[in-house]
Length: 333
Image 1 (cartoon, rainbow, N blue to C red):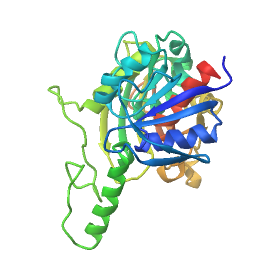
Image 2 (image 1 turned 135 degrees about the vertical axis):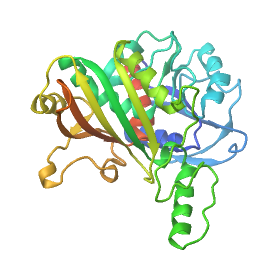
Image 3 (image 1 turned 30 degrees about the vertical axis):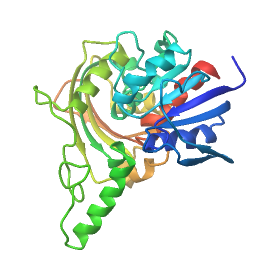
């Protein structure tokens, strides 16, 4: 292993890119040099990393000749166009888009769950969907202890999962709504302020693209095609952190106490489960934090081996940037 690496971030000016920069500095990732890449619209911007002022460059096929590690978060179209070139140039790429997640030869990895899969990479590793990541961190201890037959999950996803611009649009919508002014829609298909909305394209099956991502990614990460997965994803007027209501049917009986014991010692999990004292995971508490927070663990009396859980995590950190960095750290550091 080397002492330091030449790193590039594709999509450096976006919300995930900004979080990557923050975490790379905070975690002292061994960086020899840092190249920041984005579209031509953002080229020329100056970003400060530690004490260095770095000019953002337009991403091209010539951007990767001197790069060891690439973190990509500029969207699936950009990744499909440029990431194969980075791999061909010998870089290790952790891609945070949907471009390669379901490719048979590309590992889809959550370090706490299936890090061994990453070691079989051919230069490219995919970061799962933000909602899938936090669900997998919470459910892997239960899967190991009792097996999982079926998952039913409803997500309550923050607007930062769409983009940094979406956060500002929610601010503007909220201000307009409170002042009784008309709501202008720019990025959202419906009013987001004081509303719960569906915010992803729908497929012919009636499922949204986001819902199908969670179904397919869950089975790939756990390497278990037998698991039934039913998903409903919605967007809520929260700035940061996704919340999930998860119902699982296990193969073997697992009591809530046993589930808490599994999760209390699970990597990347913080257990907050004292509802009698109003202690349970909240989006405002998870925002800006690295762990996945789990609580409200209780029996589902409607089925033989059922459990309900409430799971919250920062979608930009563990749901994106942190997961990507942890993959690279496990392989390189």
